[in-house]
Length: 379
Image: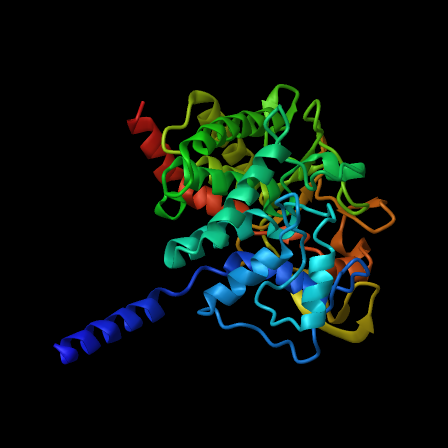
């Protein structure tokens, strides 16, 4: 009897160790920004030796997630949830709980909600459930009546109020809601009243995405990084992020739309228009090469390399991050907001500190034939 009990306990322990992980990949950008970007707005800074929890220490990580959650239910950006904090650091974070620098930028808020949901399903600790539901309520409160989500909420200064696709903000939220709408098991605890609100929010979000799609001379293409929160026009954000066709963010939008099980005619048309744009806008015979350069410390980061564009007949198609509206020329910018038309004209700090080219549209083109077959059969 005792031997059987010990065997059962050993089996349970092994199963727990095997399952006690929750995906942390979505937090890469926000932790990278904390460690590698100089930012005076940080409440706390990384310790020199950077101690971190193991990915299997899910409750310690989830406790960090709860620690950083603001009173309004959202989260700030650019902290490492795996960081092992000192008591002084924890106190500083707790004192900032009432701040409203809550955002969807750099993966903030929706990634924390996803993580808490996964940890709750493994631990049944109601603290994680409650934190997750508060995060969901924050997301629902932040949505505009027209279906879009801003970059920050409730802070609506400047470009923070625009409907934001940059760095996966709105699509990250939509992917979270998509999981709940599709009854993924880690969200089984979400009550029906919230589910009803989430389904409505999700439907409004799809409608907003379709309304934001850029149309020029009656032809639809793709999307801008951010769109006006009232009339959906493309809008500029930071000085080096002009109102333009944005190929990287647009690829993410299209891949999301292709996930929908039963896309309506408007969604199908939006995907097809975007695919046509990607087919004709890819650049052939060019690649971006990283080269060594004198070590330099810029205002936000250090660098010992540079980026140059070289001719390469064997290179796969590549797309500029930005294509100019109407002319469709590859578009680049410096921090002074002045547009230029080649990477060489961009100052080094911005050349190495921003992704000016992307291969992401190729993922759309690769998946499109199978998707088109599926939606054609379902008609």
